[in-house]
Length: 129
Image: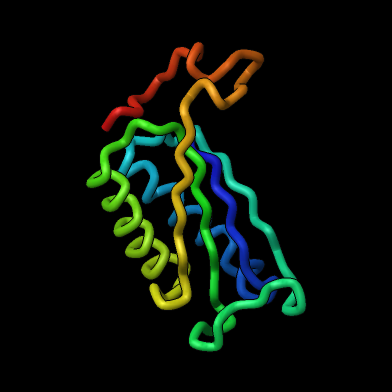
């Protein structure tokens, strides 16, 4: 049940939001088995004065942060990143040069979900892949 934050310029994200959302979730489903109905995404739309980035990136520069339970293998996480780059390039037309992805993992006990600590949840999907 990864939580996704997407940061980018308003002029870039607004016209691509639905395509980008679809690409991100398709990558999560393909690479780590996220269920289709478990979609948690937030788009942080920024004005140019609030989004400073290197000059070797275009105005399409986008940052994606993925927060998820720990437990997935290094190869699984690398596959997620590769799949995300591929799906986003194909679906949302953002080049790899303009996309940065960071995965943040925390123990399940550090999450509070539906009134209980995350490690007490019964999940319908596997985390240790």
